[in-house]
Length: 328
Picture 1 (cartoon, rainbow, N blue to C red):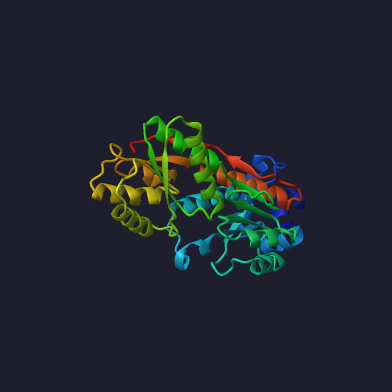
Picture 2: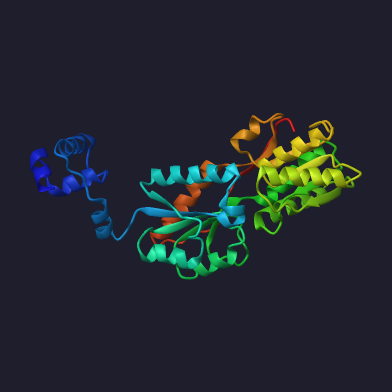
């Protein structure tokens, strides 16, 4: 560093600040220092810097692999959310450590922190891990979770307003004169339970008499949703005229099954999905859905975790929930 300072005709602290992109160094000086450093093959040892600063500048991200059969995550929304988190962390000059499927318990998480593999955790999807996450958070570990906050949660949660999402779907069906609703999803997951509760609220607030059926769909893939739809259609006498699915992939599967059974979409059946994955607007017909903004979610998850890492508290929060009207 002394050599670079001499060659660039600046002080050693100025070299240090220029290489760390400090706002205390003007652009002209920074460019000169970086040019000299590049010419002479000088680079900061990031590991040494992290040891000195007692920070890894790395955030561990854990996806909810256990809710998906054989660790196969087939819901594109999770990868859209991961992309949003990755982009937000990059804006904060943080690296991302994606945890392996077997690193999915509090012992493994604590080991990553103790070994200084990461400064904190972003958990994408609570699934059925709420007990484990409470245990991990009780150790004081920096953690932010994408999901729906339980009343007794001891960790920061970022999510959409799932209850309102369900209400929006119900209001849309009522607006279109639908009277026989079908809800599709595994309500043992808190987020999905809240979506169904929102749908029920819309029914209660409406003036029409509504029939509400359920399919407790435990698989998360297109195949499992399609199989559930065909079994359901084979077993009923009266078809629903409105279907609200827990995600867009399931909506696509149900649309395909209903059309194969002779129903027109949306003539006979209105369908509302959830998440607004990119494929939803290009499906035939384009799917009406509830949007969760993954870019906003990523920014909020990253910002709240970095605040916690710095020692400041962060409260749970919700991102905006919107109904995207398309052709179903």
